[in-house]
Image (cartoon, rainbow, N blue to C red; front, side, top):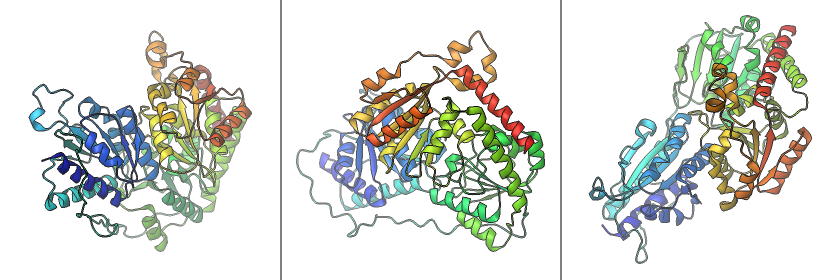
Length: 565
């Protein structure tokens, strides 16, 4: 096999990925991956994003795939470079994000003989990938070209469907790694723009029989990849007068049935006792809220889980029926059979309590800058043209707890598959690359420090990003846990204060920097950053101990408001 054979096959492979619908790929520097990188870069329908760091490249690809809902490729050279993709691969598997991982490798004769930059890459990511394949490249005859095209289609379709997730193709490549001449014309593709292999998911089946409880129903909507499905769900809940407990990541926290502050409502035992539903419909992933999860676990009501991929989100083993179908298919079936008939007084009792809690939140937060107020304010300021990417740990919890219900609010994304903070900056830049409209990142100081290298995308890739940084000098979330009482070790080993001045990081990576003193200055800084088209870090300084006390005051006020309502 010659270099010409390698490049002919890889050209056909990349052409087929583009025909399937791939628009973005990420590369990192290296020698052994040269044929893969050059083949991707020379495919005009795929935009290639260059990265210095494989981990950043993988999380960038993850963010782009999350926002576009299409497979994105990430390539790297051999050795530990491939190991650096593992955190993003694991997140993609748990979050159902379609990634195609293309790792270069030494050929078999150079393995386990002391050759440089060589590790065992066979099934490197274990069960974290949906499919692994070792791609031996033969001579580029007609049969091999047909095979490589079907391989590309299989990789794309496996990543994109049933459920979406990462696939790993490992390419052992021999030298020479660069072509000496021009490639001949490729005649192996279909004459039209269609991919070599078509795919039909088929119509979903809905195993629903007989009458179902009606009246006291609740819909719980977790993270969902489909914004259109979220709009359909909120519209159905409004028409059927069914309370909709919607995580902001679901995209369904809008409309007259949306209950925004369920996390606080469900902390009140009397409210929970009075609002036991007869039937619960669960869509998407489970929201983060512990009170909501505990409430669902303690219900005796029938619970049905709806997921187009058949994912199993039921840690408390309380779901009695699972339906593998899009949300609209089930809702159409239920309404056609007239088995859903909500009660206006039931919905109104939820709305009254929710409105009371919202008023209590406003009174307690006031206008002094705080972590909850920043989360709530971004939910009020950003419109539907914007996307808010939220870091794990406290930011995503504050967004769930304090985000209002709005008709024209932003799309909310987060890496909540494995719930880690790693790669958050890179994922946000990837999301910025894969769509239109402003991208705002809400992130804590530890998460930003963890992925500080991701900021290099601001200058190298010229991508705009507004970074709202909540800096409480450590891991504020740990103050909410029992470990905070272990005073001999907590501050140094758990809270981990760092003392970093992020203005220096902004200067190093060519980002703007602002430190607003009040809410008005914060809003002005966010608006300037979005209008400016660059990357700006907007730092809000907070105190971890005061933040804990503020959350407790909000919870107390919310309980009083619920009981008063």
